[in-house]
Length: 334
Image 1: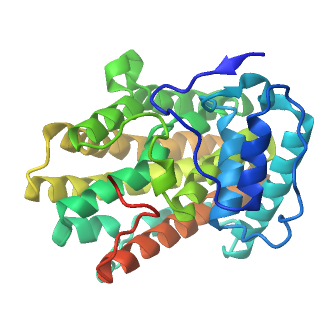
Image 2: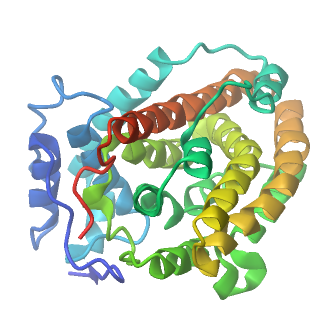
Image 3: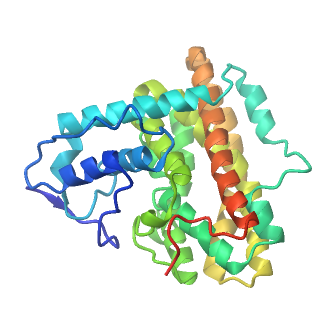
């Protein structure tokens, strides 16, 4: 048996219901052979904690693995069958919550227009947030930024020509331009450490609610399916277009709170990098992809809209808790 060790994560996350409990129990067996409980699938909330954690556990086998779990589980047929059923529920929920269409240019233009009266998480933190709320936000985003560029790498062999070359150029920057200390995931580790938070890979996952798990699971869903390559590119473009303004607001919040330099550096790096990436993704990746495969326009739009839906849902949940004077985390930080 081959055992994978996950640096910094000492234990598996706690189950959040019957589906995630079944997956966790299976993964801890010494001999890979799945015997999974599908009974709770029909009634599970596709965007809820139990299903999203179960799906996240299945996906993690394709990344850094899980502590104490055999790497041989990655291609277990029964586990893949469950993952497929979980994905079908999740994908259906995403499609039900977006408008659809095939106007890629219109969707991208819409991302560049911010309503005057909008208040998202980064706006709130810039204007009102305290250090405890900033640390909560760092905690939420940890499961995203620990694997920030990894899901997008799955799409590289599914692209051709200029679209492939341009996406690789963006990924090269995300992975530090060849310098390990500037890999964006490492910069986030530095941020967590400077903020006095646990910095191990997925070490904070028990604190993070389903709304953020769903954002990361969407990236894996799109990346691991060739049929969703257009959606992955749409998601990636949406992320790059919206990150620079958000990162600028976060830097302003951190300046106001006199945060450690390592916290600020993560965001200032994204302000500079993503302003360039926005143009590359829009014109070189999506432009060339749709010249080659115009039928993918609807998938690209779906990827953009799904990203906006899940990020908006996450932001609304966090803000509603803060505005009520409550923590936005599932479990309080120690």
